[in-house]
Amino acid sequence: MCLFVEPFGEDFWMQPEETFVVVGGTVDPEFSISVMAGHVIVWANAGDPYEVQVVDGASGDVLNCGHRRPDGWPQAT
Image (cartoon, one colour):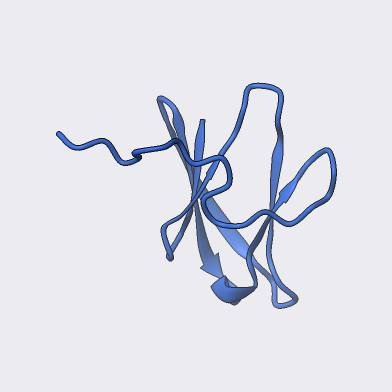
């Protein structure tokens, strides 16, 4: 499953047993969510998008863009 965080197009790849938490900054974050097969897209609609972080639900570690990105992604068509 791929989690995209917009507006910057950051990608984070989850294994079935993983959970991620998207957190905003200090100024009233507001998110919208779209779901499609194999993808979840979270848009930061309000607040500072530079303060949005994706956190591993089990460890609490802040994840970097490209977390577990598959080799060769995106696939050429």
